[in-house]
Amino acid sequence: MAYDFSVSGQHYLFNVQTFAHTVLALGGDSYNYAFRDRTTQGVIDDVASGESELGVVFETSATAAELDAAFDAAGLEFVQLVESAPRVALPASHPLVNASSLTLEQLSDYPYIYFDQGKDAPAAFFEEALGDQPRAKSIATTDRASLSELIVALNGYTVTSGILVGISDGAQLRTVALDADVTLRLGYLKKKGAQLDGTAARFVATLEKNLERYAKF
Image 1 (cartoon, rainbow, N blue to C red):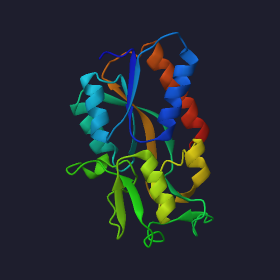
Image 2: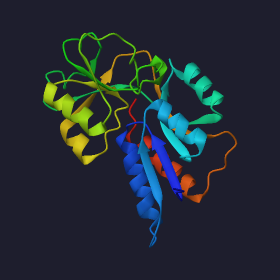
Image 3: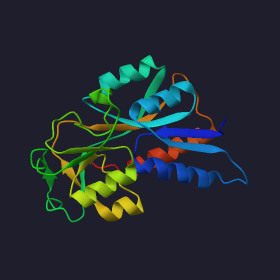
């Protein structure tokens, strides 16, 4: 099925909200859009094949070279919108939630919840900064809601951008600065040389506003 506008993205809630804001702003009596949560490879494949016009992804200062090479090989380019520091997402009741900053060593007793990228995915494709670091306790999931529920139910944590703007996530989770020597670069993928049409341009403008408003350093 052909869509008037489509977006694929990693499992960030601000993707959903930006998409919803765009749909509401455009209005109309009829439309045919698509929004897809994907793995990192899934986002690349969707944009490269034309299944989606845009892909919302992040890279870190440590993974940028490998990811940029993968984007380039797929005929895509990454457009950075904002840079921020990684943060730890914890339940609001977690014993470490009031810390000014945390290290991975301090979190070693707690389960680490992360998004499964598939069996053969390179470490650079993880959606979490420092995702390649060994953990004694780790749980993979493929769903945003499951990740949040598991963090709360198991007193666990994940590493995120800190941009938690949704009602459900915001009510359950808090973020604390992660003491790490990497930065996050959030942006979008498009085909090389592609010009954004009206809907895509509006989505990107809204995404940039949301990221700038909530990104933390």
